[in-house]
Image (tube, helix red, strand yellow):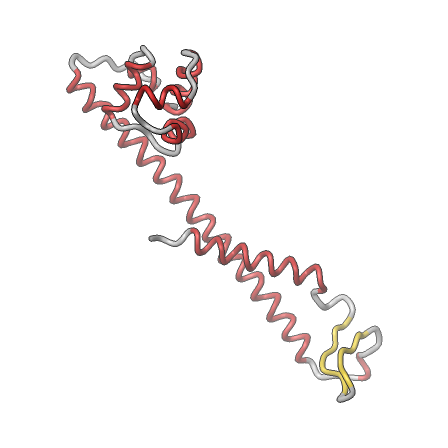
Length: 177
């Protein structure tokens, strides 16, 4: 809610992110993060934003809080911002866990396909089964047999490579630091 209210109020005042950032003494990317809900300003900055936009802090938070003095306001704002930060952290952790789980699932799929291909490649050559078979080999005889319909194929190998690379990247990007 804070992110949407901030963006709406900034635009209603005819300010760009850059202009508001200059007034607040922060960089434009900070305003962008606040408006995207990726982070939240601290309570002192929230008060400064409300002053720059000429609106009460409650309008930014979407609440109707009107404490008596500035100290009470800072305390209430700090509690609300801590709650918002906790919600952002929980959402980020859920996303990290989901991505990591899907990455491990991708590696499991690749491993199963590789095991299946290994089983097919290790089957002994049998002339009774070679109808419809493609034999790879040289002068020394066949080295492997792919029965039509049971091999992965070029497209399958490309897809498996992409899944493996994406899965490894997902695991690396989601590891805890």
